[in-house]
Amino acid sequence: DGHRYALDGEAVRSVTGILGNAGVVDFTQVPVAILQAAKTRGTNVHKAVHYYNEHDLDLDAFAADFPDCVGYVRSWIELLNGGRLTTVLCEHRVASRTHRYAGTIDWLGEFDGHAACIDFATGDPLDCAKDLQTSGYVIAATEWAKEPGEEALRSFLFELGQVLAIA
Image 1 (cartoon, one colour):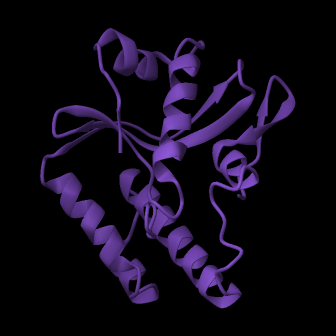
Image 2: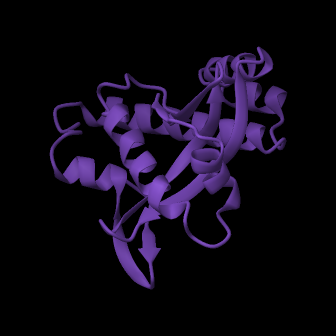
Image 3: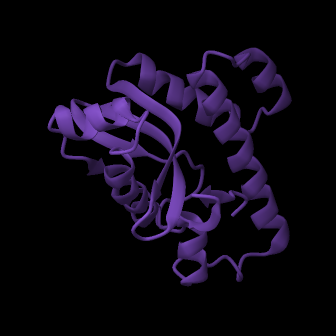
């Protein structure tokens, strides 16, 4: 887990780090070359989706540079263009003062009219415990929404009466 988080000036654990330390996510049996290739693919796709969401991705250049990754990004774009998603927040950091951890929500919004939290990944969600990861984000988000400057998060979670589905 390459993310580092601080809360009130103190280092706190990340959701993915907690899952790894607990042994819930364990890739020690995966050959190093395969694991590194998967990490590189995941990083490339995640960055591209992030830039696309910010309207700052040259898809043709990405396709030329990463032909093995572009299909994942095109799938995300098709989903967005299909009218099934309404974005509220992307790449949004949340934290729990109560439990002293933090994380970054990749995407938060409505999916087919239901509240959803999506984590961008290219592997099998079960292998990475994405259900537990996004659950950790949602728990932190409900606490973090009360912080100053978190009006969009607060509105989405509470004022609109959303019941967040874990995706």
